Figure 1 (cartoon, one colour):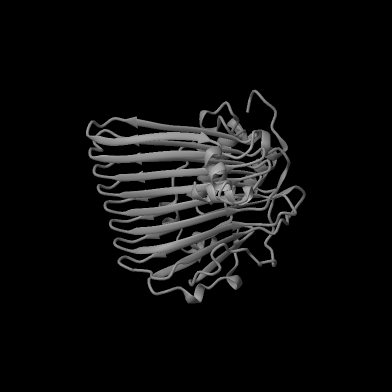
Figure 2 (cartoon, rainbow, N blue to C red):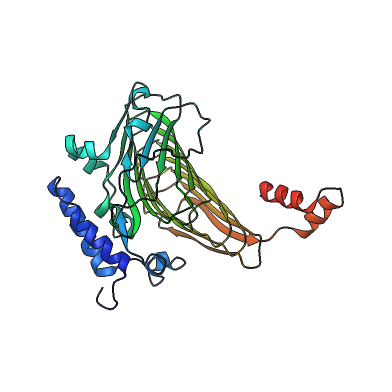
Length: 404
């Protein structure tokens, strides 16, 4: 950062990287490279094209302190009514006493990231996605302390959903805003199938930073259904990355609901690396007050005969701001690609703001691709029609928002 002074947040992040010692040589090198980029470039600002709608450096200025392991393990679960074993991670550390590790079905293995780094670091290295200079990936690689390694054996068909609960207590090990840095690896063997439900939650009473990256590897013919709910506390900041690699005939079906955190940035990258891979990634953002929710995605069609579908909808009220950035890349040789993307925003207040930037970049000639974005407010004619038939205004608005 030769042209600007570091913020307290940047200084504290660099200091925290220095405290991450030990482990395999490759991990030390990974942390060192990430630290060097952070020292040189700092946190992203709007000058960075992919961050033009979200100035992280301006939002994240206060000093950060590592979140302390907590005995307060009452973690909210948006999928509490779902019948299936749960794994709980609090303040960035796996909490075995609040998890159902003994109830995992045959063919499913779940261990903490810290334990996996001790017992089988090579498998962890193979499961990590490269940062490619992405700021959130660098931050997580430099500072990850614990997390989860979830493996489903080849051919296993997991009937009940697996739940992952990420929680924060708002407690720090030192002076500053508590921050936890979690890495989760999910790997499905050839022909395996599973469903994973995630909840990210924390207290409204205190600020904290949640920095979570998930790497998903799907072998040939594997299928994963992945539902995530981001319901962090109202004073929190949520930074998340999702990297999914699909082999031939693999299928990923994901959904993201964003409704928490004062600032959230959810990045997702999908590498359709094998012929016949199928991707569905959809989501909804419910933003009110002064919340800022940013969803940024990148779909890389690198193999022929692949299909991708992506649709995101936002309902934005008060002075909240919703951002959607999505790009589909069709590489040379990825013939018969079928990719569709759409972003649609409903503005419920004169101060609400929606920014959308869908992109297509195509280097193959036998493809079907489309993208689009819309924004607007509720239809006054529809409201009048419903009210003229005895439906009160509040109920009419709610019905139209739900229909959208």
